[in-house]
Picture 1 (spheres, one colour):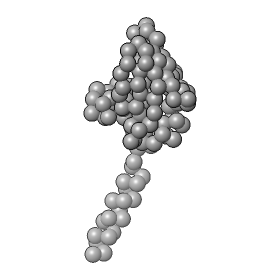
Picture 2: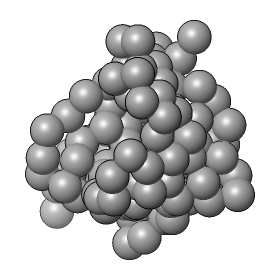
Picture 3: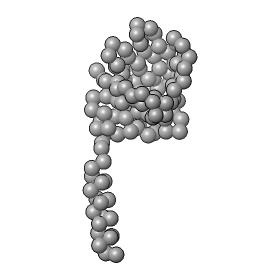
Picture 4: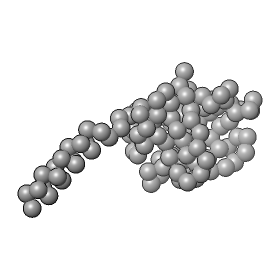
Length: 118
């Protein structure tokens, strides 16, 4: 029993120090983290960009077209509804990675892409 307790303590100690820190592949799981890390920043995807605003709106430019929408934090996912150029809703996972944010569509089950910060 003492050996099991010692092994458990060792595993806990190692894993608690090897968890990734924000910026090295950490999933953003709360609206507070999202607000602190992403809101108000210009996020770039090639020549396209988006800014997620604190007031629950977003604006950007994709493919030369103005993009507008609204967003909310729902059940651990960032959910956005585009209002321009076409309506479409998607809930996504966001993960902080070196130099930007990896976004995975369809509640973390869809295609992924990475925004960079400039």
